[in-house]
Length: 116
Image 1 (cartoon, rainbow, N blue to C red):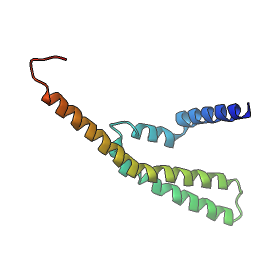
Image 2 (cartoon, rainbow, N blue to C red; image 1 turned 180 degrees about the vertical axis):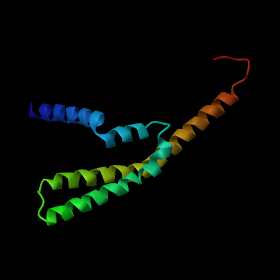
Image 3 (cartoon, rainbow, N blue to C red; image 1 turned 30 degrees about the vertical axis):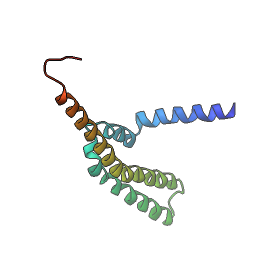
Image 4 (cartoon, helix red, strand yellow; image 1 turned 120 degrees about the vertical axis):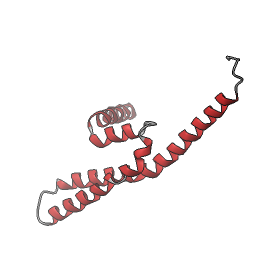
């Protein structure tokens, strides 16, 4: 019973974050076949987030609210998402191109007059 509640809460959280959080929207677009080529340039966005995290810790050290730690953890999480997506997108792109090449070879190997 308790496990079902946690499971449902995690599903609803994922749906909400996927629909409304800008980084998740961008990463969903990058996961498409057309977006895979932008994986490495998207890693540059990951550089901004550690700067935000460092700024948050500096502000906290100067006496600002401890609630900035939430922004700090969010920035670190987003940086990791973008840094890890770059190499992952290369692997996905190689796999997609290999599959496209196999499909092209298979279609070229068929005799012209026969339809299967």
